[in-house]
Length: 112
Image (cartoon, rainbow, N blue to C red; front, side, top):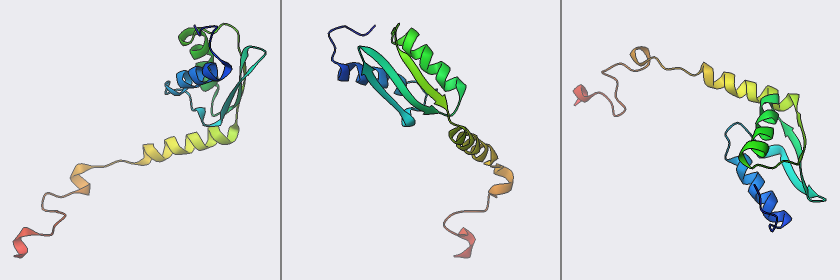
């Protein structure tokens, strides 16, 4: 639980650090502010899973009972995240096909 003696800036920093440490959340498009003593998270993410992760981090990890989550799913971010995932999945190496034992980066040793 965050201490009452922290300034708004310190609370924001602690919450953002907690969110950044969790790999489930991309904080690139999130903004946090304190309004009347209540943390308010605004911004956009790529999935509902990220919104749920934010709620879990706030409640379970940071033990913040009262906050406002105004984060929404941006279809464009979701599309980009899906494209990036597909690009990585398409990468594959077959050691037997891609690199023959006689292949070397310095040329063929028998050519001397």
